[in-house]
Image (cartoon, rainbow, N blue to C red; front, top):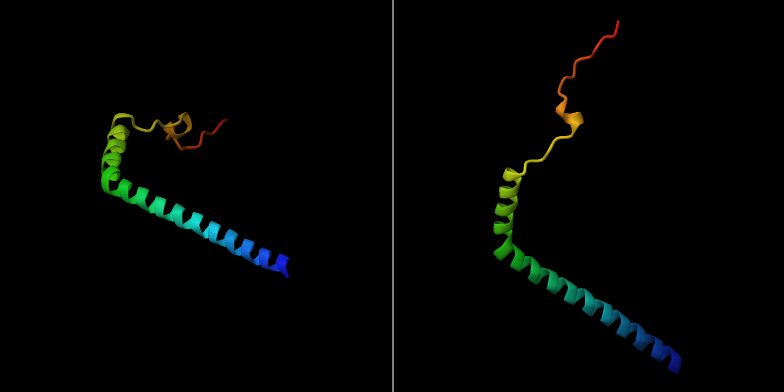
Length: 74
């Protein structure tokens, strides 16, 4: 009888502990996401756009060759 009661209490405690971790993780993510979106997103977006204009993506040597015609060897 006592071991069953301990098992139930322990199971409820573990469930409550995991639910609390999930709740805290969600609240932390929501707070960080709100801070990022309100204060950092627009500046970071402008900065990345600025860097993409200064340092354009480099094409590989395969994509630079736009000559798609077939060469016939005789």
